[in-house]
Image (cartoon, rainbow, N blue to C red; front, side, top):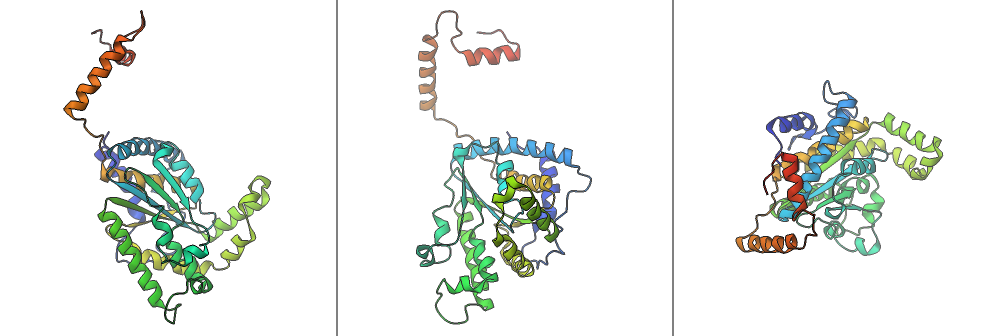
Length: 324
């Protein structure tokens, strides 16, 4: 299965406006509209395209696991209610759960704080042949830690002036080097920032309060963090400006329309897998001889009146052939 040139052009049409050009300086919300969608694309068609994308993801993931030489890390960052969980659930609905690992990261433990800021993320990285999804990630170290300086103080960094710009410049540099190391070793990185507007977040918070079955999704902490909206926008803009690279570009996914958010996220992941283009491994001549020996033995075990090879018989019937 290969993605046709026409399909790739369609995917590029969706994702190219969302890509952060490496070296560019990003301003939020001005540079990326949370309500953006591809011109002329309607929701009904968008849902159809998402279904096509899910099918492609399932096929590519199967080949990625079979080839087992490269892996994919999906990094999701967003403010509360931007749709991280829903995006994971809808985009990855058709893939084999054995080939996907989803990892969330909560407040770091004392043990984790006693190591460097990347330490706790390393053990959750994907294996070759696997897709790993970080629901929040090491980028929290230049986002929530930047907005809340007390969290940086807990990390007990050596030297003075922990809150100055040198800390963040160093962390951007470390993150870019870390991702360069991963890509050099065969692990592609898909970095998605789900970009929700302040008004849409307010509406979703109120929905979680108004609907009893959604109450569990809301806490007072969500509103407390919302009070830091402008600080978070500044931190996200700086993150986008400093960590979109040629080897690991960033994509700003508009999150105000859930259907387009999911379509765009799926399109970026499909494009990444299409670029890898994993293949099923070819078996050796000896392995093929062993397969034919096993096939002969199994055919000889067929009960009377049952085709020796039911699968071959089904294929022949479907193609209209009558050969033995």
